[in-house]
Image 1 (cartoon, rainbow, N blue to C red):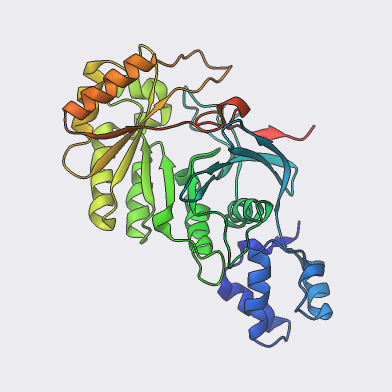
Image 2: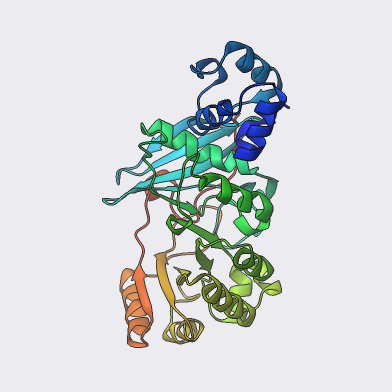
Length: 344
């Protein structure tokens, strides 16, 4: 398989252009075409001799939109096709202030969380940085955006996969998507969701990233969390709290705890009190999420009344908390519903 140019940062593109004997200014032209998702034959200001050499040795894009599904709430689920035939899913969520795109970081997932569809078939493979970037490029193109008029304002790394389980490629993706020569997004507009891989949280902070860290907590009771998130056995709550506090101190960014409310599992006053303790000591915000249905899982959401009571428990304990709206439930595009799929 040919090398993928969306995997190349600007310095690598400059080196490539130099190796092909082209003047340096061609590098920016090529890099911007790549970040616009344009095929080699349509890179109109590049000489044909260069585009022919490039097409012989490289692929300009590794991601295309195979299908899209529109929800009644106006969100859109994209079925992204990769060069090897694998499919991954992403969700475009419209807001009054900006469009938010939820992207995947792996084909499948090996975390096997009890409420999530992504890990049902296990992990097929990691996405490369350029494939993750390709999701953003493809979606931006699909809704009529370009580099000067980007139509995606925010990113959430909350699709299929555990981003910190693919740390090196995700870290490189963050550098690519924030490059001023390309899509020029700000890490302050990017959220990264993790089930709490403690060593990688420290690394994320130490490597200078400043994304919004969203930790999929889902229970502040150790044995319940271990049942819901098997990976948490190696990442106990006490260590997660230390790592989250370190991330805040290093970045100045408030940490988010994601908390899916599951009937008779994590929705009692006791659960709220334990969660409130996890949120003390540094700036934390809790996002409550009603469990979204996954047919293979035997879990049920709590009632709306129970959820509202849980939210009030937290508020009374001086915890910053909101109930998050789930986009795309009717197209299986909501939190916990994205999964690994294949072309048949």
